[in-house]
Image (tube, rainbow, N blue to C red):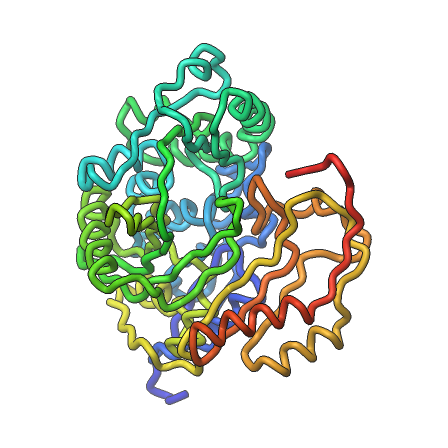
Amino acid sequence: MSENEESVDLFVLGLDDFNRTKLEALDTGSRINIYPLLDMESVTSSEDYDVHAALNAAEKRLRAHPRPVAGIIGYWDFPVSLMVPILCRRLGLTATSVEAVVGCEHKYWSRILQKRAAPEQVPVFQSLDPFDDQAVNSIQVAYPYWIKPVKSHSSYLGFRIRSHRELVRAIKKIRSGIAEMGNAFNDFMSYADLPEEIARIGGNHCVVEGFMRGRQCTLEGFVHGGRIQVYGVVDSFRYPNGSSFSRYQYPSALPRRVIQEMARIAENVLSEIGLDHSAFNMEFFWDSKRDHIWILEINPRISQSHGDIFEKVDGTPHHRVLVELALNRSPAWSPGQGQFACAAKVFLRRFQDALVSRVPSVQEIQAVEKEYPGTMVHVLVSRGMRLSEMDLAEQDSYSYAYVILFTGSRSAGRLRENIRRIKKALSFEFHENPGSAP
């Protein structure tokens, strides 16, 4: 490091070891001093989560710091994504508005804003109070449709509905679990200046929307000074159930013209929402049979799930974008500078509850990582664990993820073959529990 390099202090909400490594390895032309701001437990939303206390504790820590705070960043979903702009506003730091973040994350309001800017790309949708029996029994969207809380993550409490029977089962689960995130989201909404009709539709409401089909992908980009740039597109592959992700793969194999049209749509929608000085990832479907593009959702942050695969292909994780934006710089991105031509984050899942009776040894995992350079194996379970008792991170409503793999290769075909071999080499055993399903 040169003596002339600028030294700046950045605080990270919910800093964990995996992402700390990514941040500390960045070459930004400045010496970045990374400080944790609240631990993971303090930024995990739950039914009794005290939003105001968490924000006040974070602000107190920031104001007590002995040097100027250059910026606050976060790569997690809610509540981190909303804490960042609120804290930046309190300390006079550069960030997007709280209203723009809510406009992305409130699934019903976001659909309204999306429809203004790109009406052909938005499915039919409506809001729903899941505790109102009359409203539940008079949904206007035709089968099949999705029902999901206005604020959720990783498809948690999101259900594909094909019949009234499936709706009844889904509503029962939603009613029992929606407050875990919904109450906290309501408190965060109080920090935003919202239209009255949106303020009435809080975190314990749902959105119902028509079913969309096609190849799924995510545009990763940023907005700085009103300029929107997409720097990478990641393909999302699902298991046969159509709901659970099997892997994220970069770069995308979609036609260039389709990606360019998605980028144009993203620019129109994000301008309507008013997002600025922020990273974003925007998810789409491309129905190749109809040559039609659908918007799935918008997140006003990087997807930290994609950080390692960007690093493998482009030579740097896109955490760089967060840092540059926090320093009020326009991020520069040079694709194709990494070790691999393509890379993936892979989820190994089970679709019924079970007890874990065997996990690979440390030596077995190390052997896999040695045979396939660049591969990292993250085991999410331990022997004797019941899958249904796992933490909600990386889980959805239809499966249990028990391993996450990061790997890269010289071609997409070789990558798929490597994934197949790695799965076979990792020896897990489960004791089935008949009748227990997610």
